[in-house]
Length: 484
Image (cartoon, rainbow, N blue to C red; front, side):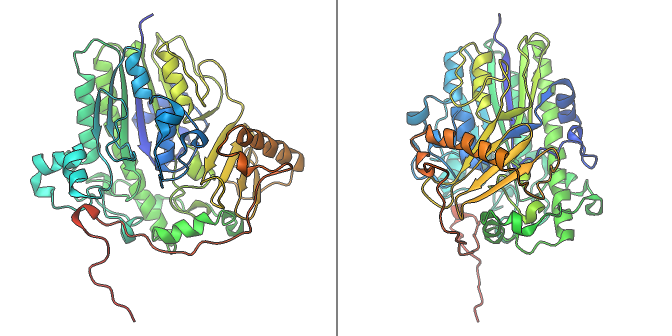
């Protein structure tokens, strides 16, 4: 049987509930809606580590953080290929595929070769001018094709104190990163190369800053947005990273109006991406092989958007860890995805299965069988930053080593995770399931005791602010600071 064309479309920090077809009556996403309606949308899909870098390495390697060795955005050493094997693009190339990757990769090192025949980067931040103007294909494109905008320090919007402030992109739509990615994708999809293709398209957005271009900046009225979900702050702050992160990214004093305004721009950015995806899908159809094509849409993680008194990601609450995970199959694809549980490591298993070289690693080939549980790990083992999760079709169990705190939620009765349930039989069973997973790995078995899990005396981190200026221009802080 002819090998199918395979297209991955990924967004950064895209919440599961930010798609109209997932029940959101406030947002317009007609192209994603069509993928949901015609394909398989997993309603219990999770990031294995809800933050950018480790999530992306799980996608490329098919492995959990305990095997990639990357548990947060702080990468001490990159030995992913040594630990896990070749990246997905290399495996697909050896299976006879033409491979291309376009967009955000967030690798360490910045210019890591992920095995694509063609790899074009558009990243958020640069540490020096070489990264910006030589290694980042989008920033280089702006510098050469639109030099009148090359003076803009942050092409995606201002960060630091503006990270969660509603903004409008300083660039016109015609030269935004989303447009650049769309045009480069269309070029690859219009290639005359007769080999089947494996494409990976990775949008930077809707990751903050929430700065859609005109006219998407005014598409949604903040007064039409809902307030953040009201939850128990004491329960939310069981994960002390939430208040730490809020302070870090200047989001600790956001009021309800500002939260609604930020969400309006967040939704505007998503509708912009949806329109770009529509153009990409038109190019997929124009190739004439749509019936032998499989399209995946997913995100690396979500965004709290004020729910659980939190902003950003890096928790195992659903707003952060739950992701859209859509599989659309052409009529000639006999394999059909199964179950409702899914996670990022499954992408490797499913893509290689379609290519005829199935290699599951830490994932499950959801074309063959359904998952029973999903696992998540964040933070270096052996430290109080370590936390983990197991989710089955009804319950979610979260363990926080800082203080040895445990949270068990009945996700059917309490989908907003407002109140943990006291069901010791369920809690012990899920804790033991997670212990077995941790014990099976050399990196994480240190977090398991004979009778339970390793805990550390509860300790809050000293709060601080992060400066996210344009390091490529040597800007590290505010120009003038008054102290007194």
